[in-house]
Image 1 (tube, rainbow, N blue to C red):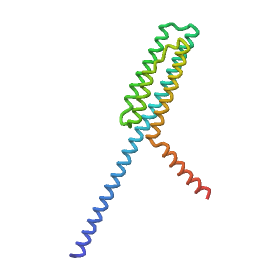
Image 2 (cartoon, rainbow, N blue to C red; image 1 turned 90 degrees about the vertical axis):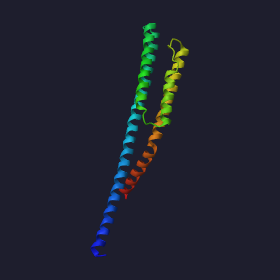
Image 3 (tube, rainbow, N blue to C red; image 1 turned 90 degrees about the horizontal axis):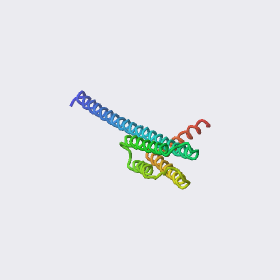
Image 4 (tube, rainbow, N blue to C red; image 1 turned 180 degrees about the vertical axis):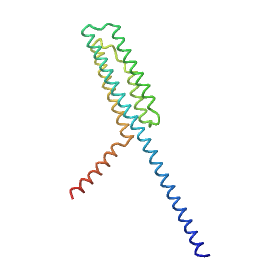
Length: 182
């Protein structure tokens, strides 16, 4: 075996090793990009879901208490009250459809919490608000709904690991602040 044969074998081994390392780096980068894309997808869907839930709660409370105020002032008819409740039901169906469209690829824990919120919305039994018991029942319903939305938010935060990210960022900035003071 001559020196040129040994040199060609060594160069082939080095080229193969370089190719292997390049391939592994590419594979790792691709996995990292896919994970980032999935995380961003979940984050955006969670933000949109929380926006929809918050807007729904605000809108329905506003509609309900506007109806009660109008009923107290005797400026609303039975048909007007029915229209308000139809509007509340319509908004609930729109919310359900929007949430269903966003639930793809989300963990079961979050989906279960969202389903619980939808169950509270559709089975809450809000009355017309024509007497104090119905008003109190509606206020309790809104309180339960707000707590369930809070549970959804906590499940989303846990799924995204935002507490861990916050802790790591705090530690990282603490290290930078210490270096600046040195």
